[in-house]
Length: 441
Image 1 (cartoon, one colour):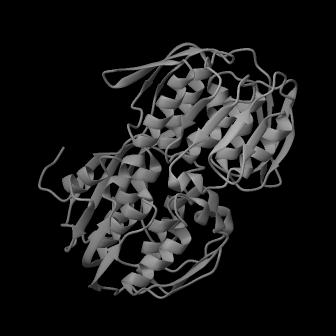
Image 2: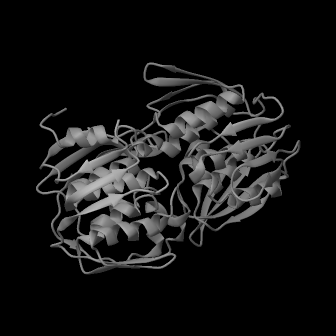
Image 3: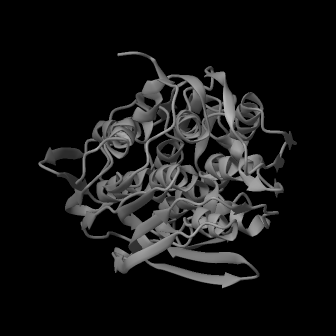
C-alpha cells in the first residue's frame, strides 16, 4: 500500500448520512476503569485503533483478561489491587499520551518498578505535568525528560491538594485515578477541561464531588475500596466528526448527517466557534446515555464565513479541532485571531507550527507566535498549486487536516504517512470514499 495520498481534485457534491468511530479518550478510559473494577465489564463500540491496541496490550501485561466477542469487548477486572505482574515489567504506550499519563495514576500503589516507553513522538512529550502531582502522592520515578521513565508506587499513597493550571483532562484524570487509592480526600482545583472521567466516576458510584468556583472545577475524590463492573456503549467521537463537519461546510452545495455523536459540552467548542463564524450546524434527536449527551449532527455547506477574534474561554473545548477551524478562517471575510494556544505545540507534533506551515504552503497569509495565530481570510480563495506534506511526526490530525484542505480548497496534494490514521481513525479514508461516491446507506 502506498505511504502517501494523492489528491488533485475537489470532492463531489454530496448528501449523505454517516456514523463515526467511538471517542479515543473515552475508549481508553473505559478500558482502564474496567480493569480496576470488580467483575466482568462489557464495552460495546470501542474504537479499534493503534492507541486502543496499546491500551489493551498494557492492561493484559498487568494480568487482566480482555477478549473480543462480536462487536464488544469483555474486560475481567480484579479490583483496585488486582494488577499482577513481575519485577522489571516494561509497558509500551505507543503513540498514546492519554494512555501513558492515565496508566501512571493506576500505578500509584505499584509494589514493583514499572518502565513506560512509547514511540518517537510520545517520547518527546511532557510528562512532568503528571509526575509532579504523582510525586506528592508518594510515587518515585526515574526520568531524564519524557519517555522512557521508570515509576514505582507506594504502599500507602497520601491524599493531596493540587492546582491543575493547564486545562488538561489527562492530568486531572491521572490524579483522580491515584486518588481512589489514597488515604483521605484528594482535592483538585482545575482549569476547565473535558469531564468524561468525572461523569464515569458518578456513573460507577465512585466517591466524587464536583463544584464550580471562579471558572475552575473543585474536584474532591475520596478513597474507595472497590467499584462494580459495568456495561457501556460508546457513542461517536466529536473530534472524528469534526473532519466531516468542516468537509461539508467548505464543499459546494452539500449536506451531511452524522449519527450518534457525543456532544458533551466540554467537547463541542468547534460547533460553537463555527456557528459564531456563520455556519449553521444543528443538533437533532438529543438524548443522554450514561451521563453523556448524544445527538445527530446536521451540517450544510456555507459560503459566507465571518472573521473571529476568539475568546480564550473556548480553547479547552476545541483544542483538538483548531487545525480545522484554521481552514475555515482561511475562507472567512477578514482577519481572524486565535490566542492562548501554546498547548497545541505539545501534542503529537507541534501543531500550531504545522498549521502555519500548511497555510503558508497554500498561500494563506498568517502571522504566528508561540501561542497565537492571525489568519488573513479570503472568501474567494482558490488553490492552484502543488503541495507536499511530510515529516510531521506521523501526527494523524495533520494528515487528516491536510486531506480535508485538499478536498475543499483545490490544488494538487501529496500527503505522506497515510498509516498515521491508524492511531485514532483507521477508517477515515473509507468514509471519505463513501461520501465521494454514489452509494447511500
